Length: 172
Ligand SMILES: C[S@@+](CC[C@H](N)C(=O)[O-])C[C@H]1O[C@@H](n2cnc3c(N)ncnc32)[C@H](O)[C@@H]1O
Image 1 (cartoon, protein in one colour):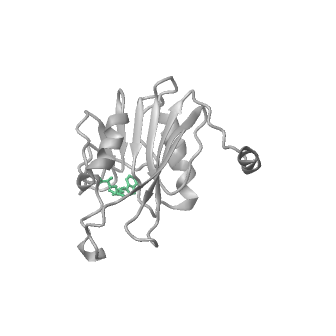
Image 2 (cartoon, protein in one colour; image 1 turned 60 degrees about the vertical axis):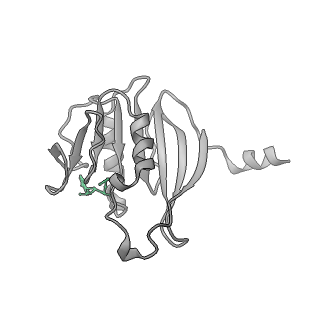
Image 3 (cartoon, helix red, strand yellow; image 1 turned 45 degrees about the vertical axis):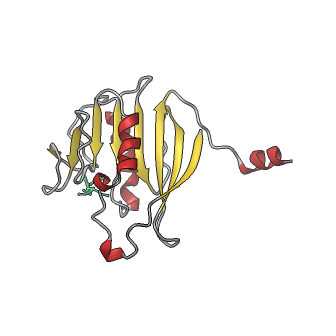
């Protein structure tokens, strides 16, 4: 598994000068998602960004650029519909509903080799039969800003977390 810490540019020193949070003005983030997407792609919580890879864009807001206005907790797609699911949900995603978000992604993703889930989140979800193959810690502009994790999960890959004891043993 690759683990890195990547930072944002400090181009916008004041919070009120920050542009609206969207991938559209974060080309490196956009590139990370697009370069890993394969096959039929579902983009959840698309906001103001279309990836330009013939993906299905979903958002609950009518002010978004979505192709389908829908709720991530009740997706209007059959089981096993997509090869790639991408999402950058709101950081305030309700704690008590996070498992429903994970379950809906698990339901609509195809369970076959090559399928992948690409997420930007502040928690590490568990997907049965999908393993974590990339983890990048995306650091905010300020030391107090929340971090987010850029993660890729791939079908058929095992990535059980390593117990801390085992890790410390390797340092001896
Ligand atoms: C962090 S923004 C995503 C920004 C996006 N990456 C972009 O480049 O514009 C989160 C998005 O999730 C959408 N959203 C919030 N709750 C949702 C829900 N229950 N179902 C679907 N979309 C939702 C919001 O409307 C918002 O566009």
